[in-house]
Amino acid sequence: MAEEKTVYSNGILAESGDYGLILDVGELYELIRAERGAVNDKERAFLDVQTAGRQAKTLGPPPSIVPDDLVEARWGILWPPEPLSAAEQAHKDALDDLIAYRRQQMGGQAPHQFYYQPGWSYDDFLWEEGRQVEPGTMQPDIVPYYLCIVGPPERIPWEFQQYLDGEYAVGRLWFDDPADCARYVKHLLAYEKTNKPLPNTREALFVGTQHPDDPPTQTSATRLVRPLYDWLPKAPGLKFRASLLLGAQSGSEATKTHLLQRLKGRNLADEPLAPPSLLFTAGHGMEHEPPLSSAQYATQGALVFQEWPHRYATLKPDHYLAGDEVGQDMQLTGMAAFCFACFSAGTPLEEDWVYPTFLKKPARIAPAPFVARLPQKLLAHGLVAFIGHVSKAWDFSFLGTKRASEQVGTFRETIGELLRGRPIGHATDYLNERWTHLTVLLDRQVANPKKYSKEETIATWEARNDCRGYAILGDPAARLRVERLK
Image (cartoon, rainbow, N blue to C red; front, top):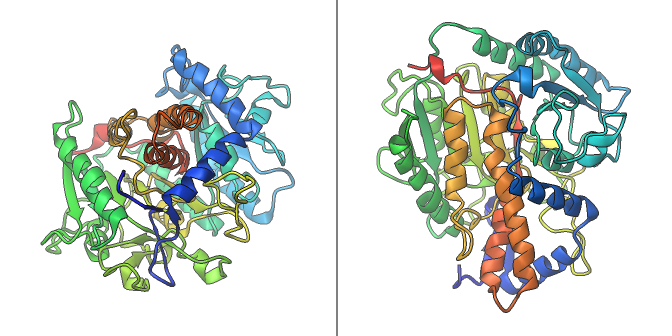
């Protein structure tokens, strides 16, 4: 990092084939210093609560609450403000069977159902309407640990989800086509209720692109994907095997063609092969120059694969996987996906990687915030849950600094919890804890410029933003049923 003069985000502009963001180290450092001096009250309140919570070891539910037990941890839904639109009402109708099943799992206790109010911060939600739950004092009988947001980010903001997820286990369900919501619920309930052996195997598939003259994917392939692949077979108690599609590695290239084979239940020789239980990818997410057209909505956040030849090459359909390519021939039931890529989960209204300061104001990057099309279609065809980025992913976010350990350990912990069958929302607690820790460290570095180098501070900032940027799409109480895997 010390030799770098520029910083890249981990995304590629479809039209030019260049990085979605390129910043000079000195320029970014000054932006970070200005940002930390202008942090809003919502983040300060959040940090105060979460820092105290970490010291008291109360992240997640209280120690007396078992997170795997919905009778104790509880489950609820957060709807958009009333009146609901036609699409929102269709989503609500589609969730009837899931609500009934979660009620059964909670011993007959009715799931809590809340309605978001415009302008609410996460602490407003916890306190309003007689709930009077203070941040950091979780009471699952009043506000459940597992909270499923059902609504578009234009009506229930991404930022609200991210802050609430810092303490609770939060996921979002929203589909451009409400029928896809009904399909997701049908697949999920069939998967959760079955007593038969599952078609998946105890396998995690790691996919990492590695393009020539491309620092972001060179780094993610060698410092994130490969270490995770090497770690999994040795991980105590998991008993999962790892498979790898990496760069241009002969016979197992990280191509779209190879990934589609695996998602269709075939090996690279086109022979039948049971699908994996976990898909982990690291590479570029596809971006478009704002303003976005209706056609671009469909491909923003699409995953770019090894077929993309090099930087500055315009992205073509053969280079990336978009949502409208997901079909009935894919065997996704019982699989979870964890994708390190820009905009892979969704796109905010404005740049959210810097706060408004006297140096820079966030630019609008979309007519409205939205959920990426690819995870919508994967969920509608059987995926249990999707973990991805809202906004940008950062090329050095997992490397660590002299005073902060490499973030690959956070990925290991999250993947380990997923493969132990922990609920998806709880498994990502490690990312949320890391976000809090790194924000406190960042403030200390900015306040002590003589002690901490620019490069060190920027690396911490990138890692912090990366953790903050993750969001769960799907029911946060869903989990991989590892007890029924072969």
